[in-house]
Picture 1 (cartoon, helix red, strand yellow):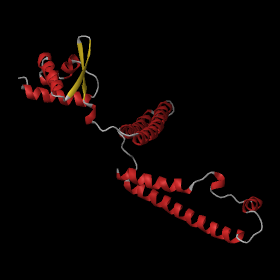
Picture 2 (cartoon, rainbow, N blue to C red):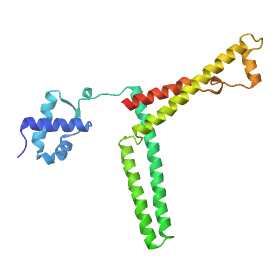
Picture 3 (cartoon, rainbow, N blue to C red):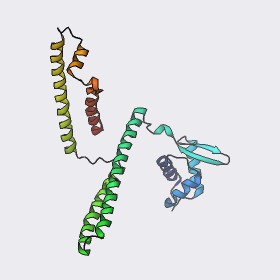
Picture 4 (cartoon, rainbow, N blue to C red):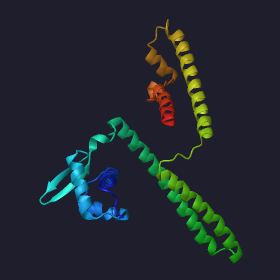
Length: 225
């Protein structure tokens, strides 16, 4: 039994919003066959949704193209888009690494098949196929944007990184205090004196301490997000 008119509109509206792409009535009818909906009531539902302002449409000749209302979706700003691009690039890199590892395992299987006894081949093949399955599961998680680093591992890494930053900050301050004390009453030009001694500080080699400290804060924000 086909759904009632108001239910039909609800089904059609949900579908149009979920797809969020240009659709004609035939696209919608083909996709909603599982609901036992015919083309005529779908056309009526689309027209009613347009009239009520729940979806929009454009006419191309005799054909109408229906679209979801874009003002209902959250559109990321440029900063969010850049972060998403960066995350996608990182995921793609890790995905490529996993694919490479999987290919190497499969190549090893083929190699072992010609060097081991039949019994050894079966045992090794089962072991390697298990490894391949585990890698493929990781690939699926990577494609879904799931992080493979446990909270405990992340916390330990952040602790080491934080301690390294703290030691860097302490040594940076100690050097600055000693250097200021040496050069305060020295007749020599500090820059020339530093070159004479062969001393290079962070700025001389293009390293910015704050940028490394900001990475820590950025990582914490992403973890909370």
